[in-house]
Amino acid sequence: MGFINLLISLFPRAVMQGVPILYGATGEIMTEKAGNLNLGIPGIMYIGGISGVIGAFLYEHSVGAGNALNGFLAIFIPLICTVIGSLLAGLIYCFLTVTLRANQNVTGLALTTFGVGFGNFFGASLIKLTGSDVPSVALSRTSAFFSTKLPFAKSLGVFGKLFLSYGFLAYVAIIIAIICGFFLNRTRGGLHLRAVGENPATADAAGISVTKSKYLATCIGSVIAGLGGLYYVMDYANGVWSNGGFGDRGWLAIALVIFAIWRPNLGIFASIIFGGLYIVYLFIPGLSLKAQELFKMLPYVVTIAVLIVVSARKKKENQPPEALGLSYFREER
Image (tube, rainbow, N blue to C red; front, side, top):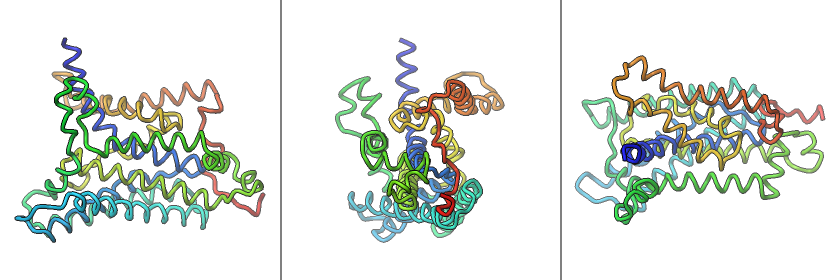
C-alpha cells in the first residue's frame, strides 16, 4: 500500500518534470538526425518560454483585469508567440552553422547564452511594468487554460490520477514524439533526413538538398523545444515567470537525447525516468542540502552510464549520426 501511495505521488510529478525535457529532447533529436549538434536548446527553450509570456502578458492587459479572457485567444496568442520566437532562434542557428558554416559547438553555446540573456532582459522589463514587489510575473488567468485537466479524470481513480491529470501540452509532447519517431523511421522524408546526418556528400549526390534538410530539421526541432519552455511556464510553473527559473532543464534535454539513443519514442519513457530521478530526493526524508544536490546529478550519472554501455556495444542503430557536428562543404565532395 505504501508503494502505491508513493507511485501515485511521485509519478505525476515525474511526468510534469519530464514533459519540458521531452520537448527539448525531441527537438534536439530531429536536429541531430540532420547532422546538426545544437547546444543552443537551453537558450531556445528560454526564448520560447519568454515569447509566450510576452504574448500572454500583452493579451491579459489588453483585455483588462475585470474582464474574462477568451479561451481560444488565451492559448493561441502565447502559442504562436512561442512558435515565432523559437523559429527565429532556429533560423539564426541555421544561418550561422549551415550557410556560414560556423562551428556548431560555439554557435550553440552562444545561442544558449543569448537566449538566457534575452529571457532575463524581457522578464525583468515585464516585472518593472507590473510594479511587482516580487521578482516574477504571474499570468494565472492564462495559465488556467493551459493547465486545465480532463473533467472525468477524478472519476477514474488511480488510472485517472496517473495518466489523465495533465494539461493538454503534456499530451501534445507525447504525440509529437510519436510522430517524429514515425517520420524518421517509416517515411521517405525521414530516410532522406537520416541520410543527410550520416553522410551529407552521399545524400547530396543522390539529389537530396542538404541545406534544405538541415534548415527544416533544425527549425522544426527549435519550435518543438520552444514549446517545452511554454509548457514549463504556463503549466508546470502555473504561469509564473521568474528569471533563472528554468534551472538546468535545457541541458537535461540534451542529455536525454543520449539516454534515449536518438529515438523519440523511447524519449517518452526516458523523460519520465529523468523527471523521477530529478525529484526523487523530495521523497527521501532527512536529506541535507548537499545530499539533495547530489541526487539532482542522477540523470547525468545515468546518461554517462548509458553512453558507456552504448559505446561499448557499438551497435550502429544506437550511435549518433556519423556527420553530427560537422559542417558540410559541397566543394570537397
